Image (cartoon, rainbow over all chains, first blue to last red; front, side):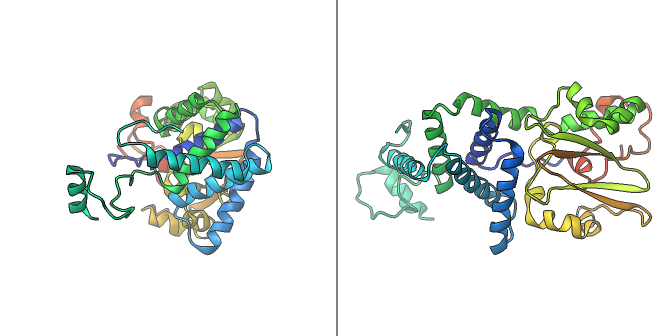
Length: 103
Length: 219
């Protein structure tokens, strides 16, 4: 009982991708059973090549599922996501240390 | 890695260095998945599909406000109040909703009670379905392939790994969660707890005891 509990999310992006999914669900863009089926399929596929430890690989599967899911639903396409990711990467690289990173 | 190099750079920063990402001043560039999540958030926000403030609210809720204490309160109350316990076993969704613990994903809650005859244990073989409103976000092991595969195949061995040995006559029943139905195990009340308050009892109810991979703590 005295052992310190592990943090709920070990990386900030784990929390972010979780919250994004819950928020989209609560906003009515998809229902949860539909999400669970898609996520379960990704876990099964990823688990064929290696044993998933339930940590980083779990949230990697979550992210992969969400990206594909949003593409299928026409909410966010792969190309625009790649472009936005590249824009963020460039923003991080050009921003001096300590300054807020903006697109 | 390269700590001496970092110190040199910190002093001057105008010294031309080979472009080595490990020691580059921009090594704070977020990881690939972190950048992908950021891209998702930006695209969805710009389309008006999400509200960034709502994301912070969700994270705060799951990091700070929802956790196993919710489930422990339900269990402690069930131990103290037979009518409450009967209602919980009959319709857990209604009972825990009445306590303010309701599934925002629309799932039903089912409470299963441990007895001398039956020990209950919960898994999600599909993904990681879990009674969030009562227990918060599942621990890493609950999401691992090892637990998800072995809980059904060899539950007694899994229990042994958790340090739980049951009497031979006790049957183990494994419940497979789904997106629609989530389970809460009501562990057996330890001996020597008569007259304890709800708060005192809550301290004995561990997260694992409500998943069925542990027992309630004896005082």
